[in-house]
Image (cartoon, rainbow, N blue to C red; front, top):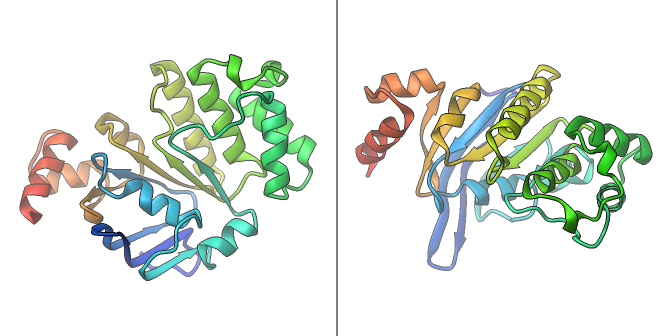
Length: 241
């Protein structure tokens, strides 16, 4: 895949934090309407890559393009929604006040309508006046997702969005991600939970800052000669060690 209309193009991306090489020749491409999963253990580089695509980190080398622009240009244009691994919300503000604050930061057009739509999508319209501090962990995850959805950006970056949520909410989240993909939104989602991988169109297995295998879950299992993705990951990791 090498399309000028790709949502994300990353070629030989490198990022170092002191002695730690977090990304070392990272390659990935994501198309519009595609759900791509970054799968790997903690510390493998998933969050570093997502933060670089979100324009929060400057890489040390390689090329990154987001919808034909630099990451920071794409974010400034409102083309990227980002859900962080840990909810980045103001606890003392209400749900609606949080969304209004982030909508203003991102200069979201039609703010009131955008907030109404985001709250409807995540099922929190009736809790819009509740302070975030009074919400359960799962509800806070919903608020974080609503923030990312403001203005319906064509690229959604989700850093372990289902951590700490119950199975029913996890199922709801993934049903919605699939709905977004059907509307040509590109979704890049990181996880270390192997059973979520089957829900992605394509996977990138990450180890030590680079992609060691890429393809559908079935293709990766076949390549590794393994019955499940966890075993496939272990076998492929050993082959490139």
